Image (cartoon, rainbow, N blue to C red; front, side, top):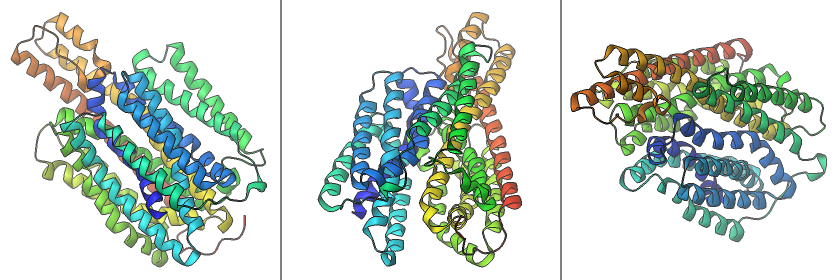
Length: 500
């Protein structure tokens, strides 16, 4: 049963990181715009973030093994659809379906472990699960990059199919069924619908605005309706008997501070993980395998130091590491903004990865401890689920918002560089008409080699300018997360929490 939980959760964890490495190849292969590439990530993140709490509750109601295996089946079917997708619209729709499957299997994996192991063995089992998922998170981007480089981006999705078959078989053969307390509430289907609609329309407006313009009624109207739907969701959650997100949890200053920190810091991290592969592959000339391996220092430092950082909470309390960690991470984000075009990985992006890894490793375990210690024991599951959902919403929103920043800077810089170049005016106009493709701009026909080099340099430098702005803003978000910990989280070691 532990194998099923590890393999099942690894499907979602690996897919979330591998697809970023494959994005440049996907965009090129399907002739997509940058907004299309954003939706490949955002459609999955949207459904996963909006439905993950509902998925966990459904497991308690209808059976954890049942919901878990249905989630794996949906994820596998969607992966096959992704692999055979003939265009970007099919791929985006298939990724959304993957998000639905992920929302069912991710909470189910931990719930199965909790139900199957007695209290004295549960910690060891969860530790094993955490360790192996960390290993798969490290291997995944490298394997995905290798598949993209030597075969096709489609194999990034096809590789999920044999794993899913193994998970379903092991689940039905060895995992016993278990349920939670069905009679104490009901599934908040209207709440799930409202938050999915709200986030979806808000993100749609922000992604489409750079290409359409904010004066376009589609852009501002969808964003406005998204804000209204999200507000209506919060209003409903405050009044329903069985909320998807129990807002009373936020009465705890520690819980609110931890989730604000999560929102800010994981927004910065999500933006980095989205834009960095474009920088490494399209601008710096890395192969997909090398781009996937570039993240290894970050993942390995997190894997080896998180346990040590967790021990700091018992000695110093959570506040100190939750202030220092984001400050160190901010330095890492700033280091990502430093390199130009070219240079050796070990002197450009490796130091940034190491510093960011040191900062994040000081956050992950203390953050989880703060979330769990800020509520009573019977609320621990939903508190963890809320924090998990917040981290995913953070990435969802940051890719949309900082994508607007990156596109705006790229657009201005490219126009400026083209005006300063000696390219013929019709060729300049042909390039500007493709600006919504970012680094995937195709040189107009008729340019000689020197002109093509000038154009390539202009596109690369323009993208790098946008990337640097995103990293500087990410550093600012990281510093704000440190301030939230300083002002909202207690500085004392954890103590027992009374029922809320």
